[in-house]
Length: 429
Image (cartoon, rainbow, N blue to C red):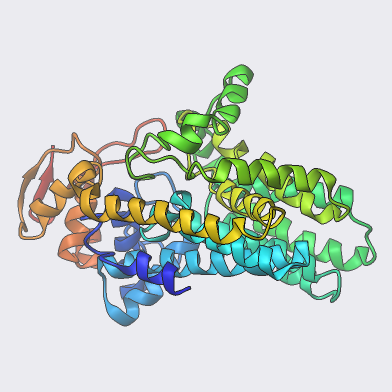
């Protein structure tokens, strides 16, 4: 835990050096809710935040809103929930792996590997919603395991599943898929209680269905989704590409430090050993790790950007757990050597992140808008790049009611996206 918190909180407001547009949107909408319980569009406590027209999910925004109410709006407040959810992911990894493998050492190793993993690192120190989704997904799985001993945990599992699907879009696909898998592979001893839990989950889908079918959601999906089956298959398997996993990583530098893979090379033999151990194990529960690995790339595979580390974030947990199984299966003297190698790799990775990341990626994090709006309260700004209005609102902590009273929008496009033409003393052209 100490290693996780130190490396996530160190210079958290300085690296990356600015918030990008989704962080700014999350932060300002949280600020608006904390101010008068309404989002930037004037909707009271919305379940979906309209934002730029893509309708952001509520869990992370409300997490930021609670902190904003206490501490005020800042980069730290926007990013701190990701740190806390990330820490929760590490803790749940330990608990879940111990629960599945019946071995405390494997749980400790899995949580350690995930702590130093490049896959989780940036996502757990910047304002990404995916880490919240991963946290509630693992909580959902953990409660399902506890349900085997106490019946009431099936209700807690349903509630965790609801929070997962309202945290990050990937889990709107993964949760139903896993529910089907779980239903087909379990002996159902309390069908009535399970149906109640399923009913709670299905009721939570009603606002999602409305968003997709009645509010241009299906059209928006077309802007990012693939329809060609061959392209989807190719996209799926790209997440297992050697270069993506161990050499270059995600091409989006907001998702990864340039020139680093999603995993360290040391993990390849450990992962293969872990797969072999699963295949030979008499404990059928350990097959869950392979199930997670197979399911994890599905949400990312139907999108046009591929491979995509963020949408496939469940792979980080799956790889860490399987690699931990492999490491435990080796001779005892291998364990301390492997830990030293992991720490060595992580030390190099962290040094590169602290020393070079801002130099290589400041424009990708839209640092120029920070320079403009920290001290600028009026003017004409180009809207050629991203959504400049949200940076003005965020950095100036612009009063939400004043924004709503003065804002003028450009016409929405056919996808439902909108841009701000002006508000207050700003014009965007």
